[in-house]
Amino acid sequence: MIANEVAYNGKVEGDVIVTKADAVINWIRKHSVWPMPMGLACCAIELMASAASRYDISRFGMEVMRFSPRQSDCMIVAGTVTYKMAEVVRRIYDQMGDPKWVVAMGACASTGGMYRSYAVMQGVDNIVPVDVYVSGCPPRPEALLDAMMKLQDKIGKESSVKNLTKTAPAVSS
Amino acid sequence: MIDQDFIDELLAKHSYLGFISHEDCLTLSCNRDHWVDFATYLSLEETFDLLVDLTAIDHGEDAEIRFSVVCHYYSRVHHDYIRAHVECASNENPEIPSLSSIYPSADWHERETFDMFGIRFSNHPNMKRILMWDEYPYFPLRKDFPLAGIDTPLPAPDVVEVTKASVEPAPMMGGPFVSSGSGPMSDSEPRAKDESWTEKSEKPG
Image (cartoon, rainbow over all chains, first blue to last red):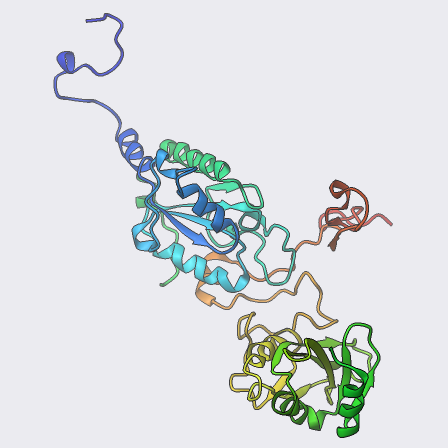
């Protein structure tokens, strides 16, 4: 046996691993992010590309795209959020089970982008809490993958029970 | 192509039409009362069986006739367009008969024209907004409506209660954003016309 071994060694420690609950729970969560594509405009095409073979989002453990909010925990808002659609985005967000995260993909979802107009919400963060913003119009698939890895880092650092102590009211759905 | 004989014959047949000189295609003004008759004629007796566009023009708040509706008909025999104008009688409650019973494609075009200009189309099967939500109080393409928009509540009260969000005028930041249209592409990309002011710092002087 090597004296300076730092990893877990079953011969020494038996069948017991001592760790923190946060570390285990977050480790599980961050490697099984189930994203829901909230595709509202052209960014959704890049989102599809990042799930396809060339960029392959499944390399990072988040390929299980679900089109139902009940089955997913990360909403990727890909595209222009109009004021008419804002209500729908919020309702779908409320229908997702906790814990949940939001990625604002592209300039429009982040800030309204080039649409400085009467019809477009100037950033989806007006209605849902955004965890990661991705720049680009549209962002390349690599940028989305980078954002998803940033989200994984963020999940790894947060308190795993924060959704149990949250008191923010939800919109009836 | 449409030749002079066709135009002469058309104008001779229909006294309610007026000729407007335009470079691109045959342009006619039409009397309000014959708007539907003319469309019926073009569709059934002539070969203009495609209504490719229907929109409106706001001539400004001070104009004597503020709104007119513009239509483009296309003929697959002539391979050419006819453009027809009709003026709305009232500036406050503009209304024009609908063409949707003759050209089904007019249905959504007329809804969009109503949505953007507030021109009602009588006898339309479903005269309501098509882009903005039903409760939206303004008509965004009218001349008196600012590009950035006007403060308005969002249509869902329960979402507003939680998020405190509302329809706010978009920041123009020295806009509107337009292309200079000349020079290399890197210089002619759309940018704010007047960068000396933003919503946070007023224009000096």
